[in-house]
Length: 255
Image 1 (cartoon, helix red, strand yellow):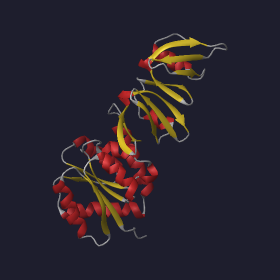
Image 2 (cartoon, helix red, strand yellow):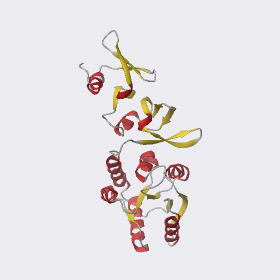
Image 3 (cartoon, rainbow, N blue to C red):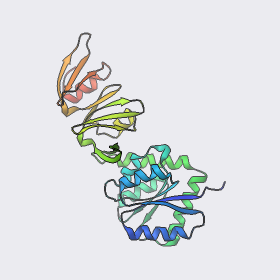
Image 4 (cartoon, one colour):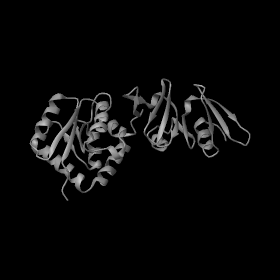
């Protein structure tokens, strides 16, 4: 099976590295550069706008690092990724698990060509395995807290930290994040959001809501045995019987 033409987005905050990647790609007849990004937010925007099938992604960039860029991209929109890194040995071990490839700066054309061959292979034969590898990589990276999320605000992309999150509610395939600065709609399910948050700081209180435990101001018992909680901001949220035991444990209360 032949692989499709490589539509490449270069994401690196070093202009000299971007130029070197462009020069190497110019020698590949099946590759074209569709865009360049110098920081993580710009990378997310250009992936959505240009739909490349290969992303040459630096690990350490301003705004969002390479891990956070991948976490911000929905799986269906995530291109095959070749990571670019200078010295992060932890990242190198994770990249090997991800089974796509990485380039260790500085690299030569021969090493770069091998990375492109691996990318072509994933595109033509084993994209599903590549996605599974990236999911393992993102799971390993999610241990670095606080998590950060990319949202659209006033027509632009911005970063919201989980440190600013008071609670979140489900809106279908989206979640509405409630922070001290306002509300932000994020393209994740509530279960996906919860998986990226610190389980010691956040608790699910209803099938459609989770809260930061430290922001629970008071609890009120309702007729029938249910509870309602009030957060520091004044927001009130019903606690379902199913989720009450976990919340009670997080609050250090007896049931």
